[in-house]
Image (tube, rainbow, N blue to C red; front, side, top):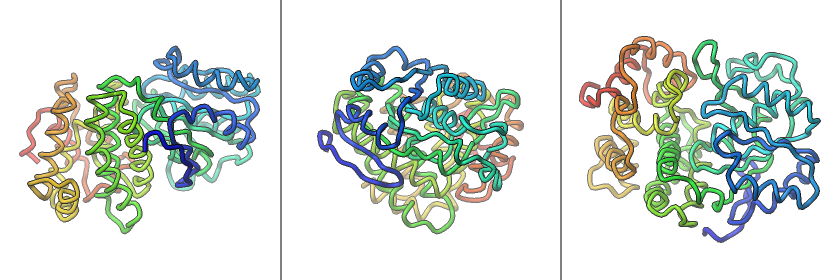
Length: 390
């Protein structure tokens, strides 16, 4: 599979296969982009994969510039500076290159490039998205270099509001990239830790989507297959980062997880969003640590689904407890800590985090209804490691 080049359209056009970055100029032409802004993050901009990618543009005489003032948890300031760069250089489209942070920032820059309202006027609340000027949204090509967030197939971005120290979701259907170039070769250089954190992030997306209430069998089916792929290929990609087959399957699984969570997410993200804003920790790492505690708290609502999932994964122990045991074993294999305390997060502001998490957009689609106190208890358990307290 890893060496096969193929295209599919779901939920957007995806060009998959090794070497597909060489088709970047073709993608620009198909979307009518003549002067792309290449958006990446401050950690990627000096790496060879960026130079290799922009060289494709240079060879075809396409004028571009690079914007890389994007931090690990992208901020309003990152976005607005990017919009100023976009308009100042008279760009007409965006190439979103990198992990979830870079792609989220890039999509928001493309969206805001022709808007006159404030960024927060488009927070994913009610019908805010209908206030956008459709003509002011630039076309987007997404090139993921990590297999985690799946932002390349999403219609929203997570942006940090530094004033309120909270993450907010910006949403519009036209934020969905027009073409995704999914090239496994671009992920070969990922360090094992990033491979692990982003990989489990994709698994959390899939598990929370699968557990979200409501009837959405398409999302459930995609989520189950994504989990199966991650279970098989993440350990391989972690151990052998140059395994193209594993890298390719993880890219696919990440996109599948993000497609599935159109159904909804849950309390893992409710907590992780707040901790990312307050402590500037990597999102996938936070999700990976919190996951088993959330599964335990949600057990009464997800047991039947976890029985089925444990059979899909061919586990000896079935049900929620079997999945929790599997996740803990996988985390140990990937050198992921068991508690938030191990990454420098304590419980002194637990009540505040519980209140903030309750207001998060992920909370209403948690597997079962939870209140601020429930989320406070979940956070405390993830700090201390007291699984049985839930």
